[in-house]
Amino acid sequence: MRLDVSLWPAWCRCSKSIRYVLHIFTIVVLVFLVLQYGIGLVLTRDHHVSWLNNASVRHDLDRDIDEVVRKWQATDRERNLSTNCPYLPPKLVGRLYINETAPSWEELERNHRELQPGGRFSPPNCKALHRVAIIIPYRDRESHLRVFFNHMHPLLQRQQLDYGIFVIEEAPGIKFNRAMLMNIGFVEASKLYNYQCFIFHDVDLLPEDDRNIYSCPDQPRHMSAAVNTLDYKLPYPEIYGGVSALKKEQFEKVNGFSNKFFGWGGEDDDMWVRINNAGLKVIRYPLDIARYTMLGHKKDEPNPERYKYLYSAEKRLKTDGINSLIYKRLDLQFRKTYTWVYVTFNEADVLAVSHLTIIGSKHTKL
Ligand SMILES: *[C@@H]1O[C@H](CO)[C@@H](O)[C@H](O)[C@H]1NC(C)=O
Ligand SMILES: *[C@@H]1O[C@H](CO)[C@@H](O)[C@H](O)[C@H]1NC(C)=O
Ligand SMILES: *[C@@H]1O[C@H](CO)[C@@H](O)[C@H](O)[C@H]1NC(C)=O
Image 1 (cartoon, rainbow, N blue to C red):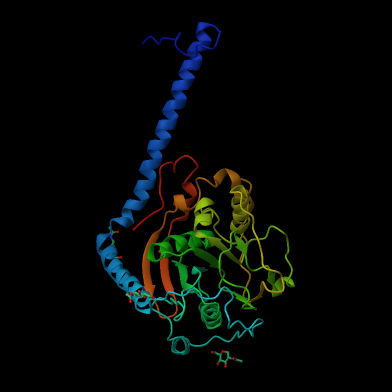
Image 2 (cartoon, helix red, strand yellow):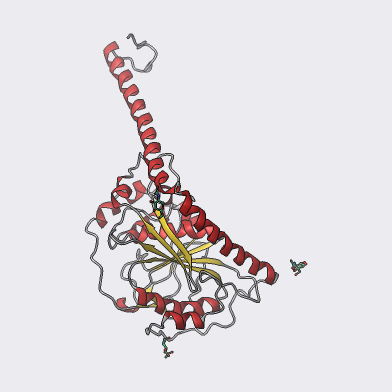
């Protein structure tokens, strides 16, 4: 085979053999890129196919889901509210008593008959200013859930929000991946309703003041700024863990959280980098309002790998996030006080998604 070496690289006033090498080099690079792109498509498609095509499960589940969403819409239509809720909710009380005693599920459900299926609420007499999804990454702290709902439902209702609480639970046998559960919560909640604002919430943190409004301002908000176990002080200025709020557009702009943090820690600091890279700035309520009580529990084992990914936070943000989310939804139930989403994923698959192999992939859609 003869290559016309005079064509490229013409700018190089070098010997024929060097041009020849440059030529070969270009071809190798092009072939490599094409292969990467192809492999990326094949890999990501493979992951999705196995569960997306399970038509029997999908069909039943979707029918139930549609029915509940239609009920929500019917309630809104019947109310036909034209006046907006006031900018400042009138029934706020300020500092709150934190009741750490867990009610039974029966008691909880009896006390909250105002909730629509899936724990959805919207103010009956005015049009809410904010449509908020509270996303709780969850694993095996069942009594904390009951304490949380006992505290949060009355608070969120006084704040006159149109809200839903989503508990995203990971199947057993996988390391906890808080960030990935939050990404999944964002995707699943968005499929059900046109939420504007997403609040990512650890289940063991309870706000001590109801002037801490659960809405999304123009910039991402770190909400749990003053936690009792940290003497109500910020341990470091870039802290972003615990409870945080982002608008839908902002979450999409930063590509959600990284999926790579298995085990405890790191994903929140990674998010801080994403937010700053997107030209956004984290804001907070004053420390005397952004107060939280942390429920007692054993401390989790920190993930020894958490710094490894942190150093590459900037490099990963375009390819590692909601656009590369690979998971399988095992169940979704509209329970009386919350919506339960049960999921699984494979650690090896998630970590194997590299910068190049996810070109062209989209997060999973039902
Ligand atoms: C589809 O889902 C059902 C119920 O979860 C399961 O038993 C079956 O193995 C699944 N089929 C495939 C092809 O994944
Ligand atoms: C809703 O209320 C508006 C006025 O507030 C009225 O014009 C409209 O007909 C009502 N729609 C329904 C479906 O009741
Ligand atoms: C705390 O909650 C428990 C369970 O609902 C309830 O029995 C108890 O009366 C509450 N305590 C206070 C002081 O409200």
